[in-house]
Image (cartoon, rainbow, N blue to C red; front, side, top):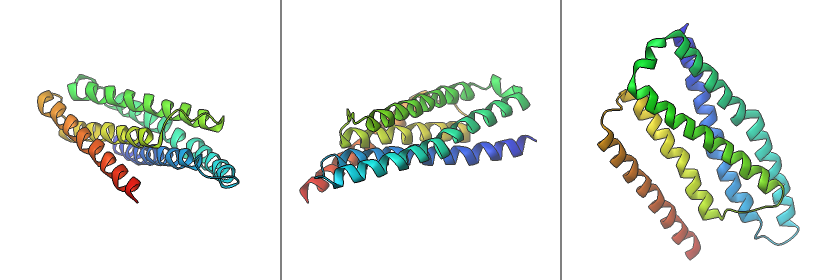
Length: 177
């Protein structure tokens, strides 16, 4: 039974992450649509709201709940996992990802009300946070090591700096055009 639940867990992690990555990409385009002249601004905004809601309520949110359910089922089927230090660290990152999910939901609801608190560059950086959390979770699960904190922290910091630099470089070339 455990391998089947694990497979379901992995499948819905992929679906959830795809939803999180794509929703913020849509937020970026939605925000940038606000700089367009009418009627393009309204037409684009209306379409982005429809796409965002469908992505969120049909793919991302159900996938998150199925990930949590499958994860809890795996812990029930294999309670020995609770004794593994790497699992505690992984679950901390998963809680961070769940918080990220609900913050994205808040952003989506604000944009639907015409409130745009984030710039497109801030949203691009926000999008990378999910990538960083995903990397941390996958490495913990594969390596099953929460002991090498120094290398892990240094790696996450370097990875974050590389991603932020890439976003800044992209912005530079984008504005240059």
